[in-house]
Structures are given as C-alpha cells and as structure tokens.
Image 1 (tube, one colour):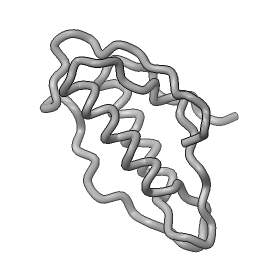
Image 2 (cartoon, one colour; image 1 turned 30 degrees about the horizontal axis):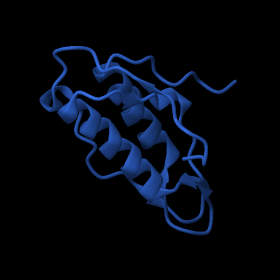
Image 3 (tube, rainbow, N blue to C red; image 1 turned 180 degrees about the vertical axis):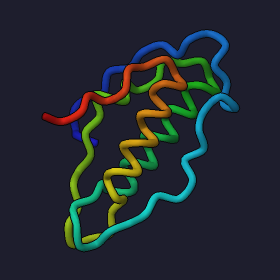
Image 4 (tube, one colour; image 1 turned 45 degrees about the vertical axis):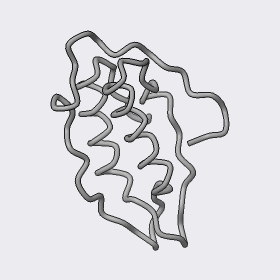
Length: 99
C-alpha cells in the first residue's frame, strides 16, 4: 500500500465476517510483477477487523500496493479478483479496470 492515508467508508449494517469471501492462498511469483504480500495481507486483515468491530473499512479501490519483481509477491490477477469480491461483500464498488 502506499504511504498516504487510505480513505475509509462505513460497512453496511448487517454485514458480518461470515459474509466475507475467504482469501485462501494466493499464487506467488518471483519473475513477473506482483504485489507485496505483507501489504495485501494487511489490507485484508484491516477489512475483516473493520467488519468485526463495526468500524469503517479501508476503501479497497483506493489502495495501491508496492510492486515486486525479483522478490516474492502475490500474482496480481487472483488478488484483484478476490479484492473485487471483498469490495462487493462490504458494499463497496470494485476497483475500476485499468485503461
């Protein structure tokens, strides 16, 4: 994630942790560009924590991750697909497709 403050949005009433998709294991890469694993894991945990506590959740579409190339990172496609599902589960818009 970038160093700037990530905006938050309220989680709709009635959303519980059981409504959220399970992240599972994301495929990793060392050769192709990927996302920093700790940043992805932290975002997912922050969203789950917001749902558990009733606090506002990070606005998922506004988050950017540090890219990886020669270090281990998560493959971007599966992470993007999961984050779109997670966005929908907490009442947010999915990340717009890059043009």
